[in-house]
Amino acid sequence: MNYLAHLYLAQPNADSHFGNLLGDFGGHRHVKHLPIRVKNALDNHYLVDKFTDNHPAIKEARQYFSVQRKRFASIAIDVLFDHFLIQHWQKFGREPISDFKRNSYQLLNQRISDMPSRMQMVVGNLTKNDWFKEYETTAGIGLALDNIARRIRFANKFSGAIEDIHRHYSELEDVFLEFFPELINHVNQSGIEDRSKMSIV
Image (cartoon, rainbow, N blue to C red; front, side, top):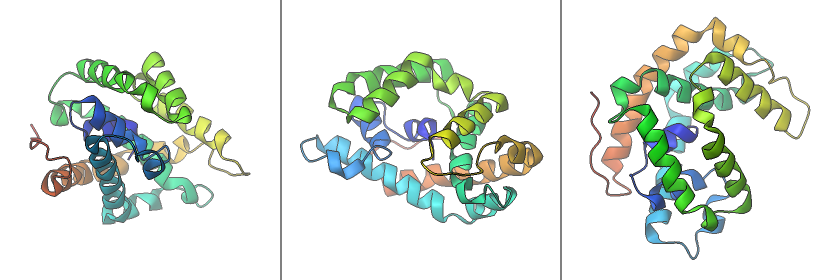
């Protein structure tokens, strides 16, 4: 899953927000001297990624991407699912998306000095420029995916992934709506962070 989904699945405190994103920035290499709540949150991040990567619906969703982009389909799905989470926020969110973003950005910035340098840069840009605002539209998703394609360190044909998404938008949205409640339940049942149960409205 991508950043918004990981933050949604975090607890509403700074340690949890930090740990639930840390998995994308070196993970266990950086937790030796961090609080147990950060370590538990990092474990929650890995739980989410493992469940996502092995879920049959996600494996099905990869088939909607063209041959030249299928290698990076998981990246596209992660970012796209943040878009769908925003689109269906009334179903999953417990507060307005604007309030959730503001609170999450504040919590992340409380721990920014403890983050690895690359994470500091990304989180600083994310919170300052409100990346999740861009995820509200498919145009924003397309731009985000093309930026990722440019950062890949070898030649690739991932650019233009939004074309595959446009062709199969409804099918991919159906996958998200099937998958995401199952992910929420899995996180709740695992209870790695001993969090309160989340309800689906």
